[in-house]
Amino acid sequence: MGVPGWFARERADGDRFADLVDGTESPDDDEFAHELALVGGLRELGAGGAPDAETRQRIRDEIAGRLAEAEAAPKRRGHAVANLAAAAVALVLALGGITLLLSKDALPGDPLYGIKRAGESASLGLTFDEQDKAKKHLEFAANRVGELDELTRQGAPTAAYFTGLADFETDLRAGVSQLTALVTDQGGQTRLTELRSWARQQSDRLGLQIDLAPTEARDKFSAARALLDKVQERTTDLGSRLVCYTITTGSSDELGAVPAAGDCVRNPDSPDAVLPPVTSSPPSSAPSATPTPTSVPPSSSVDTAAPTGPLAPPSGGTPPPVVATPGPTTRTLPPTTTTPPPPLVSIPPLIPGLPPIIIG
Image 1 (cartoon, one colour):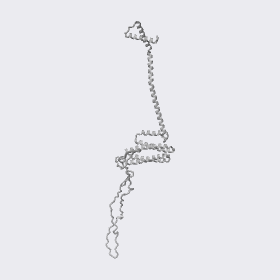
Image 2 (cartoon, rainbow, N blue to C red):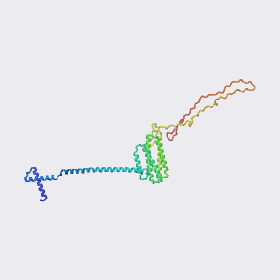
Image 3 (cartoon, rainbow, N blue to C red):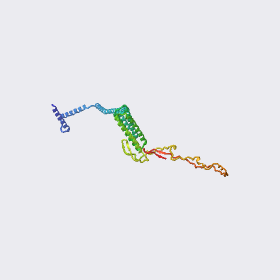
Image 4 (cartoon, one colour):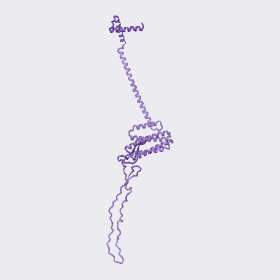
Protein backbone atom coordinates (compact mmCIF):
# COMPACT_ATOMS: atom_id res chain seq x y z
CA MET A 1 0.00 0.00 0.00
CA GLY A 2 1.35 3.38 -0.90
CA VAL A 3 1.47 6.35 1.37
CA PRO A 4 -1.65 8.03 -0.06
CA GLY A 5 -3.66 4.85 0.44
CA TRP A 6 -2.49 4.48 4.01
CA PHE A 7 -3.21 8.13 4.73
CA ALA A 8 -6.72 7.81 3.31
CA ARG A 9 -7.40 4.74 5.45
CA GLU A 10 -6.08 6.37 8.61
CA ARG A 11 -8.14 9.45 7.91
CA ALA A 12 -11.25 7.31 7.41
CA ASP A 13 -10.56 5.51 10.67
CA GLY A 14 -10.15 8.84 12.44
CA ASP A 15 -13.42 10.16 11.10
CA ARG A 16 -15.15 6.97 12.07
CA PHE A 17 -13.70 7.17 15.53
CA ALA A 18 -15.00 10.72 15.87
CA ASP A 19 -18.45 9.49 14.85
CA LEU A 20 -18.27 6.81 17.49
CA VAL A 21 -17.34 9.37 20.12
CA ASP A 22 -20.16 11.68 19.07
CA GLY A 23 -22.68 8.79 19.10
CA THR A 24 -23.68 9.21 15.50
CA GLU A 25 -22.54 5.67 14.73
CA SER A 26 -22.67 2.56 16.88
CA PRO A 27 -19.39 0.63 16.91
CA ASP A 28 -18.85 -3.00 16.41
CA ASP A 29 -17.08 -4.93 19.13
CA ASP A 30 -14.03 -5.58 17.06
CA GLU A 31 -13.86 -2.06 15.82
CA PHE A 32 -14.39 -0.66 19.29
CA ALA A 33 -11.62 -2.79 20.71
CA HIS A 34 -9.36 -1.70 17.92
CA GLU A 35 -10.03 1.97 18.58
CA LEU A 36 -9.48 1.60 22.30
CA ALA A 37 -6.19 -0.11 21.64
CA LEU A 38 -5.19 2.79 19.38
CA VAL A 39 -6.06 5.35 22.03
CA GLY A 40 -4.16 3.40 24.69
CA GLY A 41 -1.13 3.19 22.44
CA LEU A 42 -1.20 6.91 21.88
CA ARG A 43 -1.36 7.56 25.62
CA GLU A 44 1.55 5.25 26.30
CA LEU A 45 3.51 6.92 23.55
CA GLY A 46 2.86 10.34 25.09
CA ALA A 47 3.71 9.16 28.59
CA GLY A 48 6.88 7.46 27.40
CA GLY A 49 8.12 10.63 25.69
CA ALA A 50 7.61 12.90 28.77
CA PRO A 51 10.73 13.49 30.93
CA ASP A 52 10.77 12.38 34.50
CA ALA A 53 10.84 14.78 37.47
CA GLU A 54 14.61 14.74 37.80
CA THR A 55 15.07 15.53 34.14
CA ARG A 56 12.59 18.37 34.30
CA GLN A 57 14.39 19.88 37.32
CA ARG A 58 17.75 19.61 35.57
CA ILE A 59 16.36 21.34 32.50
CA ARG A 60 14.80 24.08 34.66
CA ASP A 61 18.10 24.69 36.48
CA GLU A 62 20.02 24.88 33.24
CA ILE A 63 17.60 27.39 31.77
CA ALA A 64 17.73 29.53 34.93
CA GLY A 65 21.54 29.50 34.84
CA ARG A 66 21.61 30.57 31.21
CA LEU A 67 19.24 33.46 31.97
CA ALA A 68 21.39 34.58 34.93
CA GLU A 69 24.49 34.58 32.76
CA ALA A 70 22.69 36.60 30.09
CA GLU A 71 21.69 39.23 32.66
CA ALA A 72 25.15 39.38 34.27
CA ALA A 73 26.97 39.92 30.98
CA PRO A 74 25.62 43.50 30.36
CA LYS A 75 26.40 44.45 33.95
CA ARG A 76 29.97 43.28 33.61
CA ARG A 77 30.29 45.16 30.34
CA GLY A 78 28.81 48.31 31.99
CA HIS A 79 31.32 48.11 34.86
CA ALA A 80 34.15 47.57 32.43
CA VAL A 81 33.12 50.58 30.35
CA ALA A 82 32.78 52.77 33.48
CA ASN A 83 36.22 51.71 34.72
CA LEU A 84 37.72 52.39 31.32
CA ALA A 85 36.11 55.84 31.16
CA ALA A 86 37.35 56.73 34.67
CA ALA A 87 40.84 55.66 33.76
CA ALA A 88 40.69 57.74 30.57
CA VAL A 89 39.53 60.83 32.49
CA ALA A 90 42.29 60.39 35.07
CA LEU A 91 44.84 60.04 32.29
CA VAL A 92 43.57 63.17 30.54
CA LEU A 93 43.69 65.16 33.77
CA ALA A 94 47.18 63.97 34.54
CA LEU A 95 48.40 64.76 31.06
CA GLY A 96 46.59 68.13 31.19
CA GLY A 97 48.26 69.07 34.46
CA ILE A 98 51.67 68.13 33.14
CA THR A 99 51.02 70.01 29.91
CA LEU A 100 49.94 73.16 31.77
CA LEU A 101 53.07 72.96 33.87
CA LEU A 102 55.24 72.62 30.80
CA SER A 103 53.44 75.49 29.04
CA LYS A 104 54.13 77.94 31.87
CA ASP A 105 57.14 79.42 30.07
CA ALA A 106 55.76 79.07 26.54
CA LEU A 107 56.15 82.09 24.26
CA PRO A 108 53.90 83.28 21.43
CA GLY A 109 54.48 81.02 18.47
CA ASP A 110 55.42 77.97 20.59
CA PRO A 111 53.28 74.80 20.32
CA LEU A 112 52.31 75.00 24.01
CA TYR A 113 51.38 78.70 23.92
CA GLY A 114 47.76 77.89 23.04
CA ILE A 115 47.52 75.61 26.09
CA LYS A 116 48.94 78.40 28.23
CA ARG A 117 46.26 80.79 27.00
CA ALA A 118 43.59 78.15 27.61
CA GLY A 119 44.78 77.84 31.21
CA GLU A 120 44.53 81.63 31.62
CA SER A 121 40.98 81.56 30.27
CA ALA A 122 40.09 78.82 32.74
CA SER A 123 41.54 80.90 35.56
CA LEU A 124 39.36 83.85 34.50
CA GLY A 125 36.31 81.59 34.41
CA LEU A 126 36.93 80.57 38.01
CA THR A 127 37.26 84.21 39.15
CA PHE A 128 33.89 85.70 40.09
CA ASP A 129 34.86 89.09 41.59
CA GLU A 130 34.88 91.76 38.88
CA GLN A 131 37.81 93.69 40.33
CA ASP A 132 39.92 90.52 40.65
CA LYS A 133 38.98 89.57 37.11
CA ALA A 134 40.08 92.99 35.82
CA LYS A 135 43.38 92.64 37.67
CA LYS A 136 43.94 89.22 36.10
CA HIS A 137 43.42 90.67 32.62
CA LEU A 138 45.99 93.38 33.31
CA GLU A 139 48.36 90.80 34.79
CA PHE A 140 48.11 88.68 31.64
CA ALA A 141 48.69 91.78 29.50
CA ALA A 142 51.86 92.55 31.49
CA ASN A 143 52.97 88.94 30.95
CA ARG A 144 52.62 89.46 27.20
CA VAL A 145 54.99 92.43 27.39
CA GLY A 146 57.56 90.27 29.17
CA GLU A 147 57.14 87.56 26.53
CA LEU A 148 57.68 90.10 23.76
CA ASP A 149 60.92 91.13 25.42
CA GLU A 150 62.03 87.50 25.40
CA LEU A 151 61.09 87.21 21.73
CA THR A 152 63.40 90.11 20.88
CA ARG A 153 66.25 88.36 22.67
CA GLN A 154 65.68 85.13 20.77
CA GLY A 155 65.15 86.78 17.38
CA ALA A 156 61.72 85.20 16.93
CA PRO A 157 59.79 85.42 13.64
CA THR A 158 57.41 88.28 12.96
CA ALA A 159 54.30 86.11 13.33
CA ALA A 160 55.15 85.49 16.99
CA TYR A 161 55.21 89.24 17.63
CA PHE A 162 51.83 89.66 15.97
CA THR A 163 50.34 86.94 18.20
CA GLY A 164 51.79 88.40 21.39
CA LEU A 165 50.74 91.98 20.63
CA ALA A 166 47.22 90.92 19.64
CA ASP A 167 46.78 89.02 22.91
CA PHE A 168 48.22 91.98 24.82
CA GLU A 169 45.66 94.38 23.36
CA THR A 170 42.83 91.90 24.03
CA ASP A 171 43.64 91.58 27.73
CA LEU A 172 44.33 95.32 28.01
CA ARG A 173 40.93 96.30 26.64
CA ALA A 174 39.11 93.76 28.80
CA GLY A 175 40.88 94.79 32.00
CA VAL A 176 40.47 98.55 31.45
CA SER A 177 36.79 98.19 30.53
CA GLN A 178 35.96 96.19 33.65
CA LEU A 179 37.99 98.45 35.94
CA THR A 180 36.52 101.70 34.62
CA ALA A 181 33.02 100.25 34.95
CA LEU A 182 33.71 99.57 38.64
CA VAL A 183 35.11 103.07 39.15
CA THR A 184 32.08 104.64 37.47
CA ASP A 185 29.68 102.73 39.74
CA GLN A 186 31.63 102.77 43.00
CA GLY A 187 34.17 105.57 42.65
CA GLY A 188 37.85 105.21 43.35
CA GLN A 189 40.49 107.72 42.36
CA THR A 190 43.14 105.36 43.70
CA ARG A 191 42.21 102.70 41.17
CA LEU A 192 42.49 105.17 38.32
CA THR A 193 45.83 106.45 39.58
CA GLU A 194 47.21 102.92 39.76
CA LEU A 195 45.90 102.11 36.29
CA ARG A 196 47.44 105.27 34.83
CA SER A 197 50.81 104.44 36.41
CA TRP A 198 50.61 100.85 35.15
CA ALA A 199 49.85 101.97 31.60
CA ARG A 200 52.80 104.36 31.65
CA GLN A 201 55.15 101.59 32.77
CA GLN A 202 54.01 99.17 30.07
CA SER A 203 54.36 101.87 27.43
CA ASP A 204 57.95 102.49 28.53
CA ARG A 205 58.70 98.76 28.38
CA LEU A 206 57.34 98.48 24.87
CA GLY A 207 59.28 101.57 23.83
CA LEU A 208 62.54 99.83 24.72
CA GLN A 209 61.66 96.87 22.48
CA ILE A 210 60.65 98.67 19.27
CA ASP A 211 64.16 99.09 17.89
CA LEU A 212 64.99 95.44 18.60
CA ALA A 213 61.83 94.05 16.98
CA PRO A 214 61.53 93.16 13.27
CA THR A 215 60.71 96.03 10.99
CA GLU A 216 57.35 94.51 10.04
CA ALA A 217 56.27 94.43 13.69
CA ARG A 218 57.19 97.97 14.68
CA ASP A 219 53.88 99.40 13.54
CA LYS A 220 52.14 96.95 15.85
CA PHE A 221 54.33 98.12 18.73
CA SER A 222 53.45 101.73 17.97
CA ALA A 223 49.74 100.88 17.89
CA ALA A 224 50.02 99.16 21.28
CA ARG A 225 51.75 102.19 22.78
CA ALA A 226 49.10 104.49 21.31
CA LEU A 227 46.45 102.36 23.02
CA LEU A 228 48.31 102.70 26.33
CA ASP A 229 48.46 106.47 25.86
CA LYS A 230 44.71 106.43 25.31
CA VAL A 231 44.31 104.51 28.57
CA GLN A 232 46.22 107.24 30.41
CA GLU A 233 44.03 109.94 28.88
CA ARG A 234 40.90 107.99 29.74
CA THR A 235 41.86 107.60 33.40
CA THR A 236 42.64 111.33 33.65
CA ASP A 237 39.37 112.42 32.03
CA LEU A 238 37.31 109.94 34.01
CA GLY A 239 38.99 110.91 37.27
CA SER A 240 38.10 114.57 36.75
CA ARG A 241 34.41 113.64 36.38
CA LEU A 242 34.02 111.43 39.44
CA VAL A 243 32.80 114.35 41.58
CA CYS A 244 30.23 115.43 38.98
CA TYR A 245 26.61 114.45 38.63
CA THR A 246 27.28 113.38 35.05
CA ILE A 247 30.33 111.13 34.87
CA THR A 248 29.96 109.40 31.51
CA THR A 249 28.10 109.98 28.28
CA GLY A 250 26.30 106.66 28.59
CA SER A 251 28.18 105.19 25.64
CA SER A 252 31.29 103.02 25.57
CA ASP A 253 34.16 102.17 23.26
CA GLU A 254 37.01 99.66 23.27
CA LEU A 255 38.19 100.96 26.67
CA GLY A 256 34.80 101.04 28.34
CA ALA A 257 32.73 104.02 29.49
CA VAL A 258 33.35 107.33 27.72
CA PRO A 259 33.71 110.32 30.13
CA ALA A 260 31.22 113.15 29.76
CA ALA A 261 32.30 116.58 28.56
CA GLY A 262 31.16 120.06 29.46
CA ASP A 263 30.62 121.80 32.77
CA CYS A 264 30.91 119.75 35.94
CA VAL A 265 28.10 120.13 38.47
CA ARG A 266 29.49 118.73 41.70
CA ASN A 267 27.68 115.88 43.34
CA PRO A 268 28.10 116.08 47.12
CA ASP A 269 26.96 112.47 47.48
CA SER A 270 29.76 111.16 45.30
CA PRO A 271 32.26 108.97 47.17
CA ASP A 272 35.06 111.00 45.59
CA ALA A 273 33.62 114.38 46.59
CA VAL A 274 35.57 114.44 49.87
CA LEU A 275 38.32 117.03 49.67
CA PRO A 276 41.87 115.97 50.49
CA PRO A 277 43.15 116.89 53.97
CA VAL A 278 44.23 120.54 54.27
CA THR A 279 47.91 121.04 55.04
CA SER A 280 48.66 124.50 56.47
CA SER A 281 52.11 126.02 56.18
CA PRO A 282 53.95 127.05 59.35
CA PRO A 283 53.45 130.72 60.24
CA SER A 284 57.12 131.52 59.84
CA SER A 285 57.13 130.54 56.17
CA ALA A 286 53.83 132.19 55.29
CA PRO A 287 54.08 135.64 53.74
CA SER A 288 52.47 138.38 55.82
CA ALA A 289 49.44 140.05 54.29
CA THR A 290 49.97 143.18 56.45
CA PRO A 291 53.20 144.54 57.96
CA THR A 292 53.74 143.44 61.52
CA PRO A 293 53.61 146.40 63.96
CA THR A 294 56.89 147.09 65.72
CA SER A 295 57.50 148.62 69.16
CA VAL A 296 58.30 152.34 69.28
CA PRO A 297 61.96 152.86 70.25
CA PRO A 298 62.37 154.64 73.60
CA SER A 299 64.29 157.53 72.07
CA SER A 300 61.31 158.53 69.96
CA SER A 301 59.09 159.00 73.02
CA VAL A 302 61.32 161.52 74.86
CA ASP A 303 60.59 165.20 74.47
CA THR A 304 63.96 167.05 74.10
CA ALA A 305 62.64 170.49 73.17
CA ALA A 306 63.18 171.99 76.68
CA PRO A 307 66.72 172.59 78.05
CA THR A 308 67.93 170.00 80.48
CA GLY A 309 70.14 172.15 82.72
CA PRO A 310 70.26 175.64 84.36
CA LEU A 311 70.69 178.48 81.97
CA ALA A 312 74.00 180.35 82.04
CA PRO A 313 73.61 183.87 83.32
CA PRO A 314 74.02 186.51 80.72
CA SER A 315 77.17 188.49 81.00
CA GLY A 316 76.98 192.02 82.37
CA GLY A 317 73.55 191.90 83.85
CA THR A 318 71.52 190.74 86.72
CA PRO A 319 70.96 187.10 86.57
CA PRO A 320 67.37 186.17 86.15
CA PRO A 321 65.64 184.23 88.79
CA VAL A 322 66.24 180.55 88.74
CA VAL A 323 63.18 178.68 87.68
CA ALA A 324 62.95 174.97 88.38
CA THR A 325 62.86 173.12 85.15
CA PRO A 326 60.79 169.95 85.13
CA GLY A 327 62.62 166.74 84.32
CA PRO A 328 62.24 164.93 81.05
CA THR A 329 58.82 163.49 80.55
CA THR A 330 58.30 160.14 78.91
CA ARG A 331 55.07 159.33 77.11
CA THR A 332 53.76 155.94 77.93
CA LEU A 333 52.17 154.20 74.97
CA PRO A 334 49.36 151.76 75.48
CA PRO A 335 50.49 148.15 75.35
CA THR A 336 50.32 146.67 71.91
CA THR A 337 49.48 143.10 71.23
CA THR A 338 50.93 141.49 68.18
CA THR A 339 48.44 139.13 66.52
CA PRO A 340 49.98 136.80 63.97
CA PRO A 341 48.19 136.76 60.65
CA PRO A 342 46.09 133.69 59.86
CA PRO A 343 47.96 131.01 57.96
CA LEU A 344 47.36 130.58 54.28
CA VAL A 345 45.38 127.50 53.21
CA SER A 346 46.13 126.06 49.81
CA ILE A 347 43.69 123.57 48.25
CA PRO A 348 44.91 121.54 45.28
CA PRO A 349 43.02 122.09 42.02
CA LEU A 350 39.84 120.03 41.83
CA ILE A 351 40.06 119.75 38.03
CA PRO A 352 43.38 119.37 36.21
CA GLY A 353 44.35 122.55 34.45
CA LEU A 354 42.76 124.98 36.96
CA PRO A 355 44.85 127.05 39.46
CA PRO A 356 44.82 126.02 43.13
CA ILE A 357 42.46 127.72 45.58
CA ILE A 358 44.24 129.85 48.24
CA ILE A 359 42.34 130.97 51.34
CA GLY A 360 43.90 133.51 53.72
